[in-house]
Length: 609
Image (cartoon, rainbow, N blue to C red; front, side):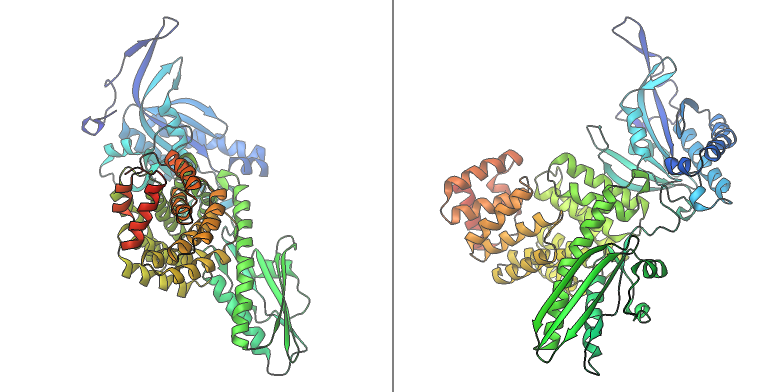
């Protein structure tokens, strides 16, 4: 398929009539065709609402929009299914004109329908040499078109890179580069582009109900104070203010403003009613009890839909510096509440039907495979993140984690083009900051791009200090700032920041990275026993994380356990067979004597020069 860019748009006759013998002695025709795979977004939900009505409306769309559009552009229907169809074209421009026309016609058709009832197609288009047999088509190209369709938003189209090469400038069509997608059961990545043909606001929400807010939302009610002294209300209010501020630094949470809660002072908390009134998924409330010398804080997190209690906590403390106590209580609440909400949301997203995905859900789904550290899962994470960007190009965390994906790809030794991955990591992190200059996660990752890939430590420190300031409860901000401090040889600061990061995210898919960075911080600070302890914990969570294995090897050599180090080094070389000390030394951001001694310890464990 190389050289298609120079071919004329008409595909007829390029490979027409080429025949290859089959095992049965019958010829099999092959032809280069444009393949369209289309599927209705949210079909199972629509059928569940009203089978007969949905079936009747589908027939009308097929007869009044799909079939006339295909006939106008010489498209051939290969097969119809209840919720979609497969068609071919002998001309790529015919294929594109047809899908644009169909999707625009569907926008008009749906204008009078409520969002929850709209029928919209996801479409994927690819060019491939396919097998024609008894009115059907076969081959990898057919599967690619079908897989591309799943990455399209409702009312949208995704095309392969090889088809996009033919389009050039096409009036009314915009191409959004999705990068290389790793499609299910396709052995090689496929470059893909989103073909925007309508205002995304006119599309349906797939399986989601029209009023469903995908992103997790939470309200923190005023804490009730029991037996407080007159004028002491500021303390309970201060705790709530601190919790709201800290939660607001978590990009994945939508936090209701403090002013919206001032009327909720009734001691009898009806979390379901509050959830409906404020449109939130989680409600946090609590109480405060003080004596002359002690204070007790009770806090509770509830699901506003079911009323179920998700988490409760009680803190007893001696009264001292009230502001320091307020900070410590807030830290305790956030370090236990945030990971529970994050993990609960991730599990909720994992249960959703693929057509029910929001950008938020897709990012949550990507976090698991992102840290599995096997290449197939890692590739799946990239596809999910790309889908999130297509679904909502304004959702910053999709860009932040895409940047992080490129960083991990380099760190794992999986990159075939380190410079290209570095540029893409910088571009996507910068995009996330453009969308929100106070996005703590984006600032932290962009800082890591500067320290890890560019070795620009001053810029990295500036960005990551900003990240910690605007997102004091963002675990990755603390952990990635620990990495940069370690590169600068500031071992004690690296340990303190890594410990804070782990404290804020003690469970979930991120924990392996927090444990690894704490191990690295201890190594740089000379605490080799602690470095081994945390390195082994991280290895139990993700044995293929090669940066952790490198640090564990060096730490084991440092405490004299050379045989164990050689065993770990053997596993490291299994996961990164191309590793050499020369390449590592030229790329590592570690500096001076720390770098030189690290390399010597890797050499002592058997890592080749």
